[in-house]
Structures are given as C-alpha cells and as structure tokens.
Image (cartoon, rainbow, N blue to C red; front, side):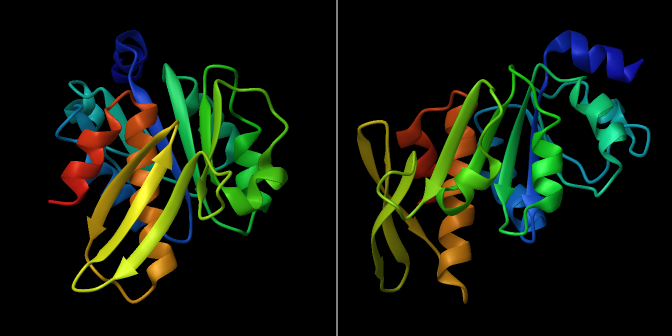
Amino acid sequence: MIEKIIKWKGVKLVFVCGKEKERTSDLIYEEIHGFSKAGRVEKIFGKIKAFSLLSKEVIILPDPGDDPEELLAFFNLFSEVIMVVDSKKLKREKELASLLNKKDSILVNFEIKDSIAGKRMKKFLTYGMDKEADFNIMDISEKEKINFKVSHDGSIVPVWIEKESDLEESLNRSVIAIAVGVLLGINLVKLTGKMSE
C-alpha cells in the first residue's frame, strides 16, 4: 500500500554508492531538506517503517548492499532515481547503474566517467577538479575554513566549508550535495549559500 502511494505521488530517490555513502547521504539530506521535503532512510521498503515517508518528495538512501533484482523493483517505485557514485571500485556500481532507465540520472566523479558511461538516461553529470567536469571544483584555499568555487553551467559560486582531515573527500561530498540539489531543481546560489552558513 505505502509503495503504491509513493509511486502515485511521484517521489524521487537519491541513491548513494561508495565508501563514504553514509556521510555523503547525511550531507545531501542536510543540504536539501530546507528546500524540499526530504527523508533519509537506511533500508529499502519492507525493511523500514515507511509510513513516515508518505509526506516526502525526495528519499535519500545509501546503498544497502541488497540484491540488484530487489533494488530494481525498489527503483521502479520512483518517478526518478538519481544515483550518486562516490567510488572508484566500480564492479557493483556498474551493475547498479545498469538498472537505471531513461527517466533516471547519474552523478559520477569525472575520473571514472568512462567506466560508467554508455547507458542512455535523463542526465549523466560529473563532478571533480577537472575543468571539464559538469560541477567543477576550483580555486581551493585553506585558512580557518576551506574556501572553493563551484563552476556549473556558466555560473561560478563560492563555497565555505569546515576543515576535515581528508580534503579531497570533503570537497567531493560537498559538491555532490550541491549537484544533487541542482538535479532536484534547487537554485545553485541558494544551495551554496546554505552550505556556507
């Protein structure tokens, strides 16, 4: 019953893969929940109390490691799946990406785009420090906080984040959260402003 309502309402799923999937999912939730009715879950329906999700527009789920066939049925409940690949160990990620269809989108690190590319879908976007990335991380400086700029679709906006021990992972998580917000139709300047608060 709950699954039918989720499908009828056109809820979107943000599905996060990679070794930092939990922290990345948390940051995506923090970044978008003020702009969209978002819910963060750990397991797919049937294993969670899904009643609280009926009012949500977006559900964020880190890869629970379930069987791909079970995940395919789960993906099909949503109006769109946005798959985030924050990983360089790609065997499982490639298998999961093959479950996506033309209504779905994928966001991957620019360095691995050729390993995942090939399937037609709504959007295939990249992030990273390469200037050709769709969400390009640039002009990084470290002082009391980390300051960098994100370039996307002709716009360049500044971002400030707290320092963490692994600079690259911290930058990647931050730009992923911003990119997911953009994919959900949220304004880039508002997203970066919220992250910098």
